Image (cartoon, rainbow, N blue to C red; front, side):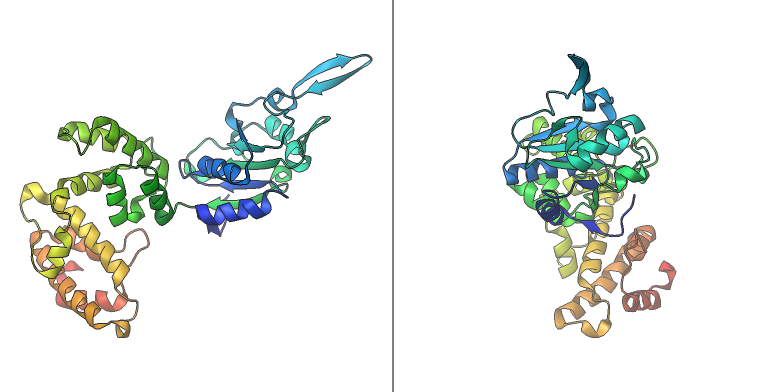
Length: 350
């Protein structure tokens, strides 16, 4: 499933607070995006314990229980983890990764909050979650009957919200500083190959690895640092993160270059730093340039003048990196009026 509307963590929390008490909600999203953490946060917000079941590891009897003979009849005894006396949040994680038989066992639990003769305590809430087919995760087709029993919402990663959480929870400053400058690198779509990719969870994992290794407090070898970074996030982001770490001693270098107080690093051994600075420069262009030229203010006009000059200087060092600054990438395109001026002044970039 790929819904046309997505929600950030804060928007999804509002959905859960309003919808989940009356209707079961299913959260769609890529692995590592924060679905489980959100449900746990929701449970804490409403003051209920959270019980998680992992759909990919369940058999039907784990839901409906086992039969017990009582006199001339029998009844099913539900599992202890589900059969509770006080209300709680039942989180069915990876619900669309379980078999069709397990999905059938969930029907009455999701629709009526009931397993056989056992009813969940009044006030209990049922929430499901799962990955999408395009996420290269273990997913199975959900039956139309099960889909129709739930309210569906798709979650997306939001850098601003994640960074607010990260600062409060002691995420390593290298990670927060990098994602502040490159918020678009918080998440990358899962690859078709078996390679690491960037998610809020993998950045958190990298933060833990950096802190445990003493990064920032003691010198780490380049090879060891590369193993940490390439083992957690996608290769493209890993290379730029390592370049960012290299230029931490001069965190204001890009600002100095734009002001004219410094130049692009031109030495061959500085090429990775140059690439990172150029990517950051592109991000600044995308953020600060208006769609229409007539909306330029005085400060913006100076920035445009400097930008064209800097792209010219950059092309003298590396035409390929200069092309990367102005090219369309991941659906992000510089304003048309700016591109016309660049093409007019630097036709070889075309």
